[in-house]
Each structure stands twice: as C-alpha cells, then as structure tokens.
Image 1 (tube, helix red, strand yellow):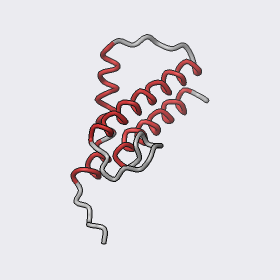
Image 2 (cartoon, one colour; image 1 turned 90 degrees about the vertical axis):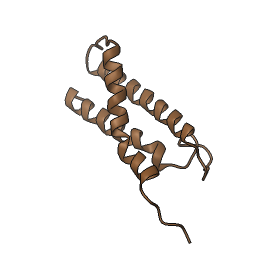
Image 3 (cartoon, helix red, strand yellow; image 1 turned 180 degrees about the vertical axis):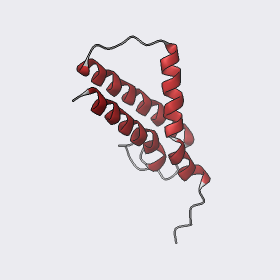
Image 4 (tube, helix red, strand yellow; image 1 turned 45 degrees about the vertical axis):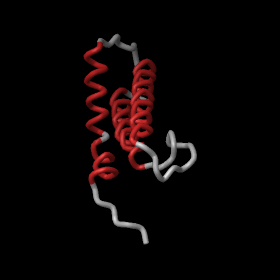
Length: 102
C-alpha cells in the first residue's frame, strides 16, 4: 500500500468511525441494543473510535515508512478534526426531528 492510499484509508475510516456512535443503538457498537442509549455512552464510543483511528493511522504510517514523532498540537488538531467529522451523525441523532414509529 502506498502512502496516498494509506492516507485515504485513514480518512475513510475516520469518517465512518466518527459517525458510528450516533447511528448505532448498540452499546459499544457490538453489544446489546439499547433503545435509550445515553449521550455518555456515545461520547465514550466516540473517544474509543478516535483512539482506534489514531492507532490505525500510526500503524499504517509505520508500515509505509518511519513513524514521525508528534507533539500535543497534532493530537489536539486530530481530536478537533474527528469531532468535525462526527457532526453529520450528531445532527442526525439529536437535531433532526424523527417521525414517530407507528
């Protein structure tokens, strides 16, 4: 896998992972369904997905070439980017008016 493909893969996984907590009613994405899943579970899942995406990126970077050391600025920017990518799922879950199921 070349460097460009690895970057696109990480971005695609980040978009999917950022929105997964808001689109799924399952606890930690794979657990039992909970129709009243709280926002705290979704925040925990969002944090775990962000760490998973970061680990994937670091792993692909190490596989493609030498892994570069990062400062706190990188992690702050990555967290802000991940929260920005989660915005569509947040809007769908909390701001869109869903019709009542009959």
